[in-house]
Image (cartoon, rainbow over all chains, first blue to last red; front, side, top):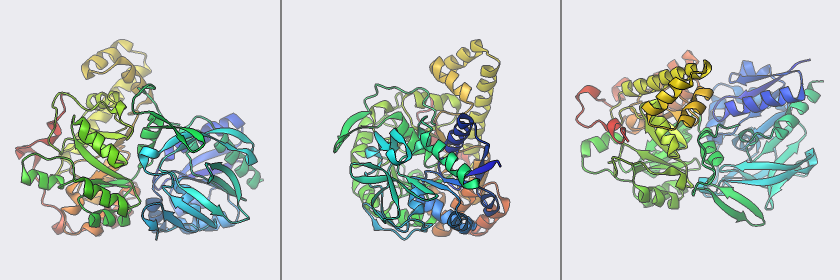
Length: 205
Length: 322
Protein backbone atom coordinates (compact mmCIF):
# COMPACT_ATOMS: atom_id res chain seq x y z
CA UNK A 1 0.00 0.00 0.00
CA UNK A 2 1.24 3.43 -0.87
CA UNK A 3 1.94 5.59 2.19
CA UNK A 4 1.06 9.26 2.44
CA UNK A 5 3.60 11.46 4.22
CA UNK A 6 2.45 14.97 5.13
CA UNK A 7 4.35 18.09 6.04
CA UNK A 8 2.50 20.41 8.37
CA UNK A 9 2.34 23.67 6.41
CA UNK A 10 1.25 26.15 9.06
CA UNK A 11 4.53 28.04 9.17
CA UNK A 12 8.22 27.30 8.59
CA UNK A 13 10.46 25.59 6.06
CA UNK A 14 7.94 23.30 4.37
CA UNK A 15 9.41 23.25 0.83
CA UNK A 16 12.84 22.03 2.02
CA UNK A 17 11.21 19.04 3.73
CA UNK A 18 9.20 18.31 0.59
CA UNK A 19 12.36 18.07 -1.50
CA UNK A 20 14.20 15.97 1.11
CA UNK A 21 11.27 13.54 1.39
CA UNK A 22 10.73 13.30 -2.37
CA UNK A 23 14.46 12.57 -2.87
CA UNK A 24 14.45 10.01 -0.02
CA UNK A 25 11.45 8.16 -1.41
CA UNK A 26 13.04 8.06 -4.88
CA UNK A 27 16.37 6.79 -3.47
CA UNK A 28 14.68 4.10 -1.38
CA UNK A 29 12.38 3.22 -4.25
CA UNK A 30 9.49 3.15 -1.76
CA UNK A 31 5.82 3.42 -2.61
CA UNK A 32 4.98 6.70 -0.87
CA UNK A 33 3.75 10.19 -1.73
CA UNK A 34 4.47 13.58 -0.16
CA UNK A 35 1.70 16.04 0.72
CA UNK A 36 1.66 19.60 2.04
CA UNK A 37 -1.09 19.58 4.69
CA UNK A 38 -2.77 22.29 6.72
CA UNK A 39 -6.43 21.48 7.33
CA UNK A 40 -7.66 18.78 9.78
CA UNK A 41 -9.19 16.89 6.82
CA UNK A 42 -5.86 16.79 4.98
CA UNK A 43 -3.93 15.75 8.10
CA UNK A 44 -6.40 12.98 8.93
CA UNK A 45 -5.56 11.19 5.65
CA UNK A 46 -1.81 10.98 6.34
CA UNK A 47 0.21 7.94 7.41
CA UNK A 48 3.12 10.03 8.69
CA UNK A 49 3.70 13.72 9.51
CA UNK A 50 6.72 16.04 9.55
CA UNK A 51 6.43 19.14 11.71
CA UNK A 52 9.05 21.42 10.15
CA UNK A 53 11.36 24.08 11.56
CA UNK A 54 9.88 27.50 12.16
CA UNK A 55 8.65 29.37 15.23
CA UNK A 56 7.04 27.04 17.77
CA UNK A 57 4.86 29.83 19.24
CA UNK A 58 3.39 30.58 15.79
CA UNK A 59 2.90 26.96 14.67
CA UNK A 60 1.38 26.05 18.06
CA UNK A 61 -1.10 28.91 18.10
CA UNK A 62 -2.15 28.64 14.46
CA UNK A 63 -2.63 24.85 14.61
CA UNK A 64 -5.09 25.47 17.46
CA UNK A 65 -7.08 27.94 15.34
CA UNK A 66 -8.25 25.49 12.69
CA UNK A 67 -8.45 22.40 14.90
CA UNK A 68 -5.47 20.65 13.31
CA UNK A 69 -3.79 20.25 16.70
CA UNK A 70 -6.60 17.96 17.87
CA UNK A 71 -6.31 15.74 14.78
CA UNK A 72 -2.53 15.53 15.10
CA UNK A 73 -2.87 14.44 18.73
CA UNK A 74 -5.37 11.71 17.88
CA UNK A 75 -3.32 10.43 14.95
CA UNK A 76 0.01 10.35 16.79
CA UNK A 77 -1.52 8.74 19.88
CA UNK A 78 -2.94 6.02 17.65
CA UNK A 79 0.50 5.32 16.20
CA UNK A 80 1.11 7.66 13.22
CA UNK A 81 4.86 8.34 12.96
CA UNK A 82 5.81 11.99 13.43
CA UNK A 83 9.13 13.76 12.89
CA UNK A 84 9.46 17.06 14.76
CA UNK A 85 12.33 19.27 13.61
CA UNK A 86 13.57 22.14 15.82
CA UNK A 87 10.31 24.06 16.44
CA UNK A 88 8.58 20.76 15.60
CA UNK A 89 10.46 19.05 18.44
CA UNK A 90 9.50 21.87 20.83
CA UNK A 91 5.85 21.19 19.95
CA UNK A 92 6.23 17.47 20.76
CA UNK A 93 7.27 18.30 24.33
CA UNK A 94 5.15 18.46 27.46
CA UNK A 95 6.69 21.76 28.49
CA UNK A 96 9.22 24.30 27.26
CA UNK A 97 11.45 26.79 28.98
CA UNK A 98 13.26 29.60 27.18
CA UNK A 99 16.95 30.03 28.02
CA UNK A 100 16.49 33.77 28.71
CA UNK A 101 12.77 34.41 29.22
CA UNK A 102 12.08 31.27 31.31
CA UNK A 103 8.91 29.24 31.62
CA UNK A 104 6.67 29.50 28.55
CA UNK A 105 2.89 29.42 28.36
CA UNK A 106 2.65 28.24 24.76
CA UNK A 107 0.38 25.61 23.17
CA UNK A 108 2.22 22.27 22.84
CA UNK A 109 1.18 18.79 21.66
CA UNK A 110 2.45 17.17 24.87
CA UNK A 111 3.70 13.79 23.57
CA UNK A 112 7.08 13.62 25.30
CA UNK A 113 7.90 13.93 28.98
CA UNK A 114 11.13 15.89 28.61
CA UNK A 115 12.84 18.96 30.03
CA UNK A 116 13.24 21.09 26.92
CA UNK A 117 15.05 24.40 26.67
CA UNK A 118 14.34 26.70 23.73
CA UNK A 119 17.20 28.63 22.14
CA UNK A 120 19.45 26.43 24.24
CA UNK A 121 22.69 27.21 22.41
CA UNK A 122 22.05 30.97 22.22
CA UNK A 123 20.81 33.41 19.62
CA UNK A 124 21.33 33.35 15.83
CA UNK A 125 25.02 34.41 15.98
CA UNK A 126 25.66 31.23 18.00
CA UNK A 127 23.83 29.02 15.47
CA UNK A 128 26.28 26.38 14.25
CA UNK A 129 27.08 23.44 12.04
CA UNK A 130 28.80 20.42 13.61
CA UNK A 131 29.25 16.68 13.21
CA UNK A 132 27.03 14.47 15.34
CA UNK A 133 26.20 10.76 15.47
CA UNK A 134 22.88 8.93 15.78
CA UNK A 135 24.23 5.42 16.56
CA UNK A 136 20.95 3.89 17.81
CA UNK A 137 19.41 4.29 14.34
CA UNK A 138 22.58 3.36 12.46
CA UNK A 139 23.75 6.83 11.42
CA UNK A 140 27.38 7.01 12.49
CA UNK A 141 28.06 10.52 11.23
CA UNK A 142 25.65 13.30 10.40
CA UNK A 143 26.13 16.97 9.56
CA UNK A 144 24.00 18.85 12.08
CA UNK A 145 22.70 22.32 11.21
CA UNK A 146 21.57 23.98 14.46
CA UNK A 147 19.64 27.26 14.10
CA UNK A 148 18.59 28.90 17.38
CA UNK A 149 18.16 25.27 18.35
CA UNK A 150 16.36 23.82 21.33
CA UNK A 151 17.92 21.04 23.44
CA UNK A 152 16.76 18.53 26.00
CA UNK A 153 18.36 18.38 29.44
CA UNK A 154 16.55 15.30 30.67
CA UNK A 155 14.10 12.74 29.30
CA UNK A 156 11.96 10.07 30.93
CA UNK A 157 13.20 6.44 30.84
CA UNK A 158 10.89 5.39 28.01
CA UNK A 159 12.54 7.87 25.63
CA UNK A 160 15.52 6.74 23.57
CA UNK A 161 18.34 9.26 23.18
CA UNK A 162 19.52 9.23 19.54
CA UNK A 163 22.15 11.97 19.68
CA UNK A 164 23.90 14.31 22.06
CA UNK A 165 26.00 17.37 21.40
CA UNK A 166 28.23 18.43 24.28
CA UNK A 167 26.12 16.62 26.89
CA UNK A 168 22.84 18.11 25.62
CA UNK A 169 20.30 15.76 24.05
CA UNK A 170 19.66 16.84 20.44
CA UNK A 171 17.69 13.90 18.99
CA UNK A 172 15.21 11.53 20.61
CA UNK A 173 12.82 8.71 19.76
CA UNK A 174 9.85 7.27 21.57
CA UNK A 175 8.15 4.60 19.49
CA UNK A 176 6.60 6.40 16.52
CA UNK A 177 7.80 9.85 17.63
CA UNK A 178 11.14 11.35 16.56
CA UNK A 179 12.49 14.78 17.43
CA UNK A 180 15.65 16.56 16.28
CA UNK A 181 17.12 19.89 17.43
CA UNK A 182 18.93 20.23 14.11
CA UNK A 183 17.65 20.63 10.53
CA UNK A 184 18.15 17.54 8.33
CA UNK A 185 16.15 19.31 5.58
CA UNK A 186 18.87 21.98 5.18
CA UNK A 187 21.58 19.48 4.22
CA UNK A 188 21.74 17.11 1.27
CA UNK A 189 22.27 14.11 3.56
CA UNK A 190 18.97 12.24 3.40
CA UNK A 191 19.69 9.72 6.19
CA UNK A 192 17.17 11.11 8.69
CA UNK A 193 14.37 11.56 6.15
CA UNK A 194 15.04 8.07 4.77
CA UNK A 195 14.83 6.60 8.26
CA UNK A 196 11.49 8.36 8.71
CA UNK A 197 10.11 7.16 5.36
CA UNK A 198 10.97 3.57 6.35
CA UNK A 199 9.34 4.06 9.75
CA UNK A 200 6.13 5.27 8.08
CA UNK A 201 6.17 2.34 5.66
CA UNK A 202 6.69 -0.15 8.51
CA UNK A 203 3.84 1.29 10.56
CA UNK A 204 1.59 1.22 7.52
CA UNK A 205 2.20 -2.49 6.90
CA UNK B 1 18.03 21.33 0.87
CA UNK B 2 18.87 24.98 0.46
CA UNK B 3 19.95 26.95 -2.63
CA UNK B 4 23.46 28.26 -1.94
CA UNK B 5 23.79 30.25 -5.21
CA UNK B 6 26.50 32.90 -5.07
CA UNK B 7 27.94 31.48 -1.82
CA UNK B 8 31.42 32.70 -0.84
CA UNK B 9 33.08 29.92 1.09
CA UNK B 10 35.98 32.11 2.30
CA UNK B 11 33.74 34.88 3.68
CA UNK B 12 34.97 36.66 6.81
CA UNK B 13 31.58 36.21 8.45
CA UNK B 14 32.23 32.46 8.74
CA UNK B 15 33.80 31.70 12.11
CA UNK B 16 35.47 28.41 12.99
CA UNK B 17 35.17 27.74 16.68
CA UNK B 18 34.96 25.14 19.40
CA UNK B 19 31.91 24.28 21.46
CA UNK B 20 33.40 22.45 24.45
CA UNK B 21 34.87 19.35 22.79
CA UNK B 22 33.63 19.80 19.20
CA UNK B 23 34.59 21.83 16.17
CA UNK B 24 31.78 24.10 15.01
CA UNK B 25 31.21 26.53 12.16
CA UNK B 26 29.18 29.71 12.60
CA UNK B 27 27.97 32.37 10.17
CA UNK B 28 27.89 30.04 7.15
CA UNK B 29 25.57 30.68 4.21
CA UNK B 30 23.48 27.66 5.25
CA UNK B 31 23.00 29.06 8.75
CA UNK B 32 22.29 32.63 7.59
CA UNK B 33 19.92 31.76 4.75
CA UNK B 34 18.54 28.86 6.79
CA UNK B 35 17.49 31.25 9.56
CA UNK B 36 15.39 33.20 7.05
CA UNK B 37 13.82 29.96 5.83
CA UNK B 38 12.48 29.35 9.36
CA UNK B 39 10.49 32.59 9.10
CA UNK B 40 8.58 31.49 6.00
CA UNK B 41 4.82 31.87 5.99
CA UNK B 42 5.14 34.14 9.01
CA UNK B 43 4.73 37.80 9.94
CA UNK B 44 7.56 40.03 11.18
CA UNK B 45 6.25 43.06 13.07
CA UNK B 46 7.87 46.47 13.60
CA UNK B 47 7.96 47.39 17.30
CA UNK B 48 9.41 50.26 19.31
CA UNK B 49 9.19 48.91 22.87
CA UNK B 50 8.82 45.81 25.06
CA UNK B 51 5.04 46.09 25.35
CA UNK B 52 4.58 46.08 21.57
CA UNK B 53 7.04 43.18 21.21
CA UNK B 54 5.04 41.10 23.68
CA UNK B 55 1.79 41.90 21.87
CA UNK B 56 3.45 40.77 18.63
CA UNK B 57 4.69 37.50 20.15
CA UNK B 58 1.28 36.74 21.66
CA UNK B 59 -0.34 37.42 18.30
CA UNK B 60 1.86 34.76 16.67
CA UNK B 61 4.52 36.91 14.97
CA UNK B 62 7.59 34.91 13.87
CA UNK B 63 9.91 37.79 14.74
CA UNK B 64 9.94 41.43 15.77
CA UNK B 65 11.88 44.28 14.16
CA UNK B 66 13.03 46.96 16.58
CA UNK B 67 13.02 50.59 15.44
CA UNK B 68 13.36 53.89 17.24
CA UNK B 69 10.20 55.17 15.52
CA UNK B 70 7.61 53.47 13.33
CA UNK B 71 8.14 54.33 9.64
CA UNK B 72 5.03 56.58 9.65
CA UNK B 73 6.52 58.54 12.58
CA UNK B 74 9.90 58.72 10.81
CA UNK B 75 8.05 60.51 7.99
CA UNK B 76 6.40 62.96 10.37
CA UNK B 77 9.53 63.63 12.41
CA UNK B 78 11.91 64.25 9.48
CA UNK B 79 15.58 64.73 10.36
CA UNK B 80 18.03 61.83 10.38
CA UNK B 81 16.67 58.40 11.31
CA UNK B 82 19.26 56.08 12.88
CA UNK B 83 19.36 52.63 14.48
CA UNK B 84 17.31 52.11 17.67
CA UNK B 85 18.71 52.49 21.21
CA UNK B 86 20.75 49.43 22.13
CA UNK B 87 19.22 49.39 25.62
CA UNK B 88 15.71 49.04 24.15
CA UNK B 89 16.83 46.30 21.76
CA UNK B 90 18.36 44.41 24.72
CA UNK B 91 15.23 44.84 26.83
CA UNK B 92 13.16 43.38 24.02
CA UNK B 93 15.59 40.46 23.52
CA UNK B 94 15.23 39.66 27.22
CA UNK B 95 11.43 39.66 27.14
CA UNK B 96 10.42 37.67 24.04
CA UNK B 97 11.44 34.19 22.83
CA UNK B 98 10.99 34.84 19.11
CA UNK B 99 13.90 36.24 17.06
CA UNK B 100 14.63 39.95 17.33
CA UNK B 101 15.74 41.98 14.32
CA UNK B 102 16.89 45.60 14.16
CA UNK B 103 17.45 48.11 11.38
CA UNK B 104 20.68 49.83 10.46
CA UNK B 105 21.31 52.58 7.89
CA UNK B 106 22.18 51.61 4.32
CA UNK B 107 25.96 51.33 3.98
CA UNK B 108 26.65 51.96 7.68
CA UNK B 109 29.05 49.10 8.44
CA UNK B 110 29.63 49.97 12.07
CA UNK B 111 25.97 50.38 12.94
CA UNK B 112 25.57 46.83 11.60
CA UNK B 113 28.58 45.58 13.59
CA UNK B 114 27.15 47.15 16.75
CA UNK B 115 23.87 45.31 16.14
CA UNK B 116 25.76 42.07 15.51
CA UNK B 117 27.63 42.55 18.80
CA UNK B 118 24.29 43.20 20.52
CA UNK B 119 23.35 39.70 19.32
CA UNK B 120 20.22 40.58 17.32
CA UNK B 121 19.13 37.62 15.20
CA UNK B 122 18.95 39.49 11.88
CA UNK B 123 19.85 42.98 10.66
CA UNK B 124 17.73 44.96 8.19
CA UNK B 125 19.86 47.31 6.09
CA UNK B 126 16.89 49.57 5.61
CA UNK B 127 15.78 52.48 3.47
CA UNK B 128 13.44 53.53 6.32
CA UNK B 129 16.51 54.98 8.04
CA UNK B 130 18.54 57.79 6.47
CA UNK B 131 21.20 56.20 4.20
CA UNK B 132 24.78 56.61 5.41
CA UNK B 133 26.18 55.87 1.95
CA UNK B 134 24.19 56.40 -1.24
CA UNK B 135 26.73 54.55 -3.40
CA UNK B 136 27.59 51.47 -1.39
CA UNK B 137 25.76 48.89 0.65
CA UNK B 138 27.36 46.87 3.44
CA UNK B 139 29.53 43.93 2.28
CA UNK B 140 27.41 41.46 4.14
CA UNK B 141 29.69 38.43 3.61
CA UNK B 142 31.79 39.88 6.45
CA UNK B 143 28.87 39.63 8.88
CA UNK B 144 28.19 36.53 10.99
CA UNK B 145 24.65 37.76 11.64
CA UNK B 146 22.32 37.44 8.61
CA UNK B 147 21.17 40.63 6.87
CA UNK B 148 17.93 41.35 4.99
CA UNK B 149 17.73 44.00 2.25
CA UNK B 150 14.90 45.70 0.39
CA UNK B 151 14.51 45.51 -3.39
CA UNK B 152 12.14 46.92 -6.02
CA UNK B 153 13.29 44.71 -8.87
CA UNK B 154 15.19 41.54 -9.63
CA UNK B 155 18.28 43.61 -10.43
CA UNK B 156 18.29 45.22 -6.98
CA UNK B 157 17.60 41.87 -5.30
CA UNK B 158 20.49 40.14 -7.08
CA UNK B 159 22.87 43.04 -6.35
CA UNK B 160 22.05 42.72 -2.66
CA UNK B 161 22.46 38.90 -2.75
CA UNK B 162 25.88 39.32 -4.39
CA UNK B 163 26.82 41.58 -1.45
CA UNK B 164 25.80 38.77 0.91
CA UNK B 165 22.15 39.47 1.79
CA UNK B 166 20.60 36.35 3.35
CA UNK B 167 17.03 37.45 2.69
CA UNK B 168 15.20 39.93 0.45
CA UNK B 169 12.01 41.89 1.00
CA UNK B 170 10.15 44.22 -1.32
CA UNK B 171 10.67 47.87 -0.47
CA UNK B 172 7.10 49.01 -1.03
CA UNK B 173 6.68 52.53 0.30
CA UNK B 174 7.20 52.38 4.07
CA UNK B 175 5.04 54.26 6.54
CA UNK B 176 2.21 54.97 4.10
CA UNK B 177 -0.34 52.25 4.86
CA UNK B 178 -0.51 51.97 1.07
CA UNK B 179 0.22 48.52 -0.28
CA UNK B 180 0.33 49.56 -3.96
CA UNK B 181 4.12 49.90 -4.20
CA UNK B 182 4.78 46.52 -2.55
CA UNK B 183 2.43 44.93 -5.10
CA UNK B 184 4.24 46.69 -7.96
CA UNK B 185 7.62 45.51 -6.68
CA UNK B 186 6.74 41.85 -6.21
CA UNK B 187 5.00 41.76 -9.60
CA UNK B 188 8.10 43.24 -11.23
CA UNK B 189 10.41 40.70 -9.54
CA UNK B 190 8.09 37.85 -10.59
CA UNK B 191 7.90 39.11 -14.19
CA UNK B 192 11.67 39.39 -14.43
CA UNK B 193 12.12 35.91 -12.91
CA UNK B 194 9.78 34.48 -15.53
CA UNK B 195 11.74 36.25 -18.24
CA UNK B 196 15.16 34.91 -17.22
CA UNK B 197 13.73 31.46 -16.51
CA UNK B 198 12.37 31.22 -20.04
CA UNK B 199 15.76 32.33 -21.39
CA UNK B 200 17.42 29.58 -19.34
CA UNK B 201 14.88 26.97 -20.39
CA UNK B 202 15.54 27.55 -24.09
CA UNK B 203 19.31 27.80 -23.53
CA UNK B 204 19.60 31.47 -24.55
CA UNK B 205 22.92 32.35 -22.88
CA UNK B 206 23.30 35.37 -25.11
CA UNK B 207 20.25 36.99 -23.56
CA UNK B 208 21.17 35.84 -20.04
CA UNK B 209 24.51 37.67 -20.24
CA UNK B 210 22.67 40.73 -21.59
CA UNK B 211 20.41 40.60 -18.52
CA UNK B 212 23.44 40.26 -16.20
CA UNK B 213 24.90 43.45 -17.72
CA UNK B 214 21.59 45.25 -17.47
CA UNK B 215 21.17 44.14 -13.84
CA UNK B 216 24.81 45.04 -13.03
CA UNK B 217 25.48 41.61 -11.50
CA UNK B 218 27.57 38.57 -12.42
CA UNK B 219 26.49 36.14 -15.10
CA UNK B 220 26.70 33.29 -12.57
CA UNK B 221 24.07 34.65 -10.21
CA UNK B 222 21.69 35.35 -13.11
CA UNK B 223 22.17 31.83 -14.50
CA UNK B 224 21.71 30.17 -11.10
CA UNK B 225 18.60 32.23 -10.33
CA UNK B 226 17.17 31.53 -13.79
CA UNK B 227 17.71 27.82 -13.23
CA UNK B 228 15.92 27.96 -9.87
CA UNK B 229 13.11 30.10 -11.27
CA UNK B 230 12.97 32.02 -7.99
CA UNK B 231 15.29 34.11 -5.84
CA UNK B 232 17.96 31.94 -4.18
CA UNK B 233 16.99 33.46 -0.81
CA UNK B 234 13.68 33.89 1.01
CA UNK B 235 11.62 36.81 -0.32
CA UNK B 236 9.15 38.65 1.94
CA UNK B 237 6.69 41.45 1.22
CA UNK B 238 7.13 44.77 3.02
CA UNK B 239 6.08 48.40 2.82
CA UNK B 240 2.56 49.69 3.34
CA UNK B 241 0.81 46.51 4.51
CA UNK B 242 -2.06 47.54 6.81
CA UNK B 243 -4.83 44.93 6.69
CA UNK B 244 -5.25 41.12 6.70
CA UNK B 245 -6.42 41.25 3.07
CA UNK B 246 -3.22 43.13 2.11
CA UNK B 247 -1.16 40.32 3.66
CA UNK B 248 -3.20 37.55 2.01
CA UNK B 249 -2.92 39.19 -1.42
CA UNK B 250 0.86 39.48 -1.20
CA UNK B 251 1.13 35.85 -0.09
CA UNK B 252 -0.95 34.87 -3.11
CA UNK B 253 1.59 36.64 -5.35
CA UNK B 254 4.26 34.22 -4.15
CA UNK B 255 5.85 36.11 -1.25
CA UNK B 256 7.35 33.84 1.41
CA UNK B 257 6.03 35.97 4.28
CA UNK B 258 5.15 39.45 5.46
CA UNK B 259 6.79 42.39 7.21
CA UNK B 260 4.31 44.80 8.80
CA UNK B 261 5.73 48.20 9.66
CA UNK B 262 3.44 50.96 10.81
CA UNK B 263 0.34 48.96 9.83
CA UNK B 264 -0.16 47.41 13.26
CA UNK B 265 1.08 49.79 15.92
CA UNK B 266 0.04 53.00 14.15
CA UNK B 267 -3.52 51.62 14.10
CA UNK B 268 -5.83 51.97 17.09
CA UNK B 269 -6.60 48.26 17.39
CA UNK B 270 -3.04 46.89 17.45
CA UNK B 271 -3.49 43.59 19.35
CA UNK B 272 -6.52 42.47 17.32
CA UNK B 273 -4.96 43.62 14.06
CA UNK B 274 -1.68 41.82 14.80
CA UNK B 275 -3.53 38.56 15.36
CA UNK B 276 -5.73 39.12 12.29
CA UNK B 277 -2.74 39.71 9.99
CA UNK B 278 -1.04 36.52 11.27
CA UNK B 279 -4.26 34.57 10.64
CA UNK B 280 -4.62 35.93 7.11
CA UNK B 281 -0.95 35.17 6.34
CA UNK B 282 -1.19 31.58 7.62
CA UNK B 283 -4.49 30.84 5.88
CA UNK B 284 -4.10 33.18 2.88
CA UNK B 285 -5.50 30.60 0.45
CA UNK B 286 -8.68 30.01 2.49
CA UNK B 287 -10.93 32.96 1.76
CA UNK B 288 -13.31 32.27 4.64
CA UNK B 289 -10.40 32.52 7.10
CA UNK B 290 -9.16 35.76 5.49
CA UNK B 291 -12.67 37.17 5.80
CA UNK B 292 -12.75 36.12 9.45
CA UNK B 293 -9.43 37.92 9.94
CA UNK B 294 -10.62 41.02 8.11
CA UNK B 295 -13.72 41.03 10.34
CA UNK B 296 -11.49 41.21 13.42
CA UNK B 297 -10.32 44.70 12.42
CA UNK B 298 -12.27 47.93 12.08
CA UNK B 299 -11.44 50.05 9.03
CA UNK B 300 -12.14 53.18 11.08
CA UNK B 301 -9.17 52.18 13.26
CA UNK B 302 -6.75 51.66 10.33
CA UNK B 303 -3.91 54.13 9.92
CA UNK B 304 -5.03 56.95 7.63
CA UNK B 305 -2.52 56.20 4.90
CA UNK B 306 -0.83 58.34 2.28
CA UNK B 307 -1.09 58.56 -1.48
CA UNK B 308 2.32 57.61 -2.81
CA UNK B 309 2.08 60.03 -5.79
CA UNK B 310 2.06 63.11 -3.54
CA UNK B 311 4.90 62.05 -1.23
CA UNK B 312 7.84 64.39 -0.77
CA UNK B 313 10.03 61.60 0.63
CA UNK B 314 10.17 58.38 -1.39
CA UNK B 315 12.07 56.01 0.90
CA UNK B 316 12.07 53.27 -1.75
CA UNK B 317 14.46 55.25 -3.98
CA UNK B 318 17.14 55.24 -1.28
CA UNK B 319 20.09 53.03 -2.22
CA UNK B 320 18.18 51.83 -5.27
CA UNK B 321 20.68 52.84 -7.91
CA UNK B 322 23.63 51.36 -6.01
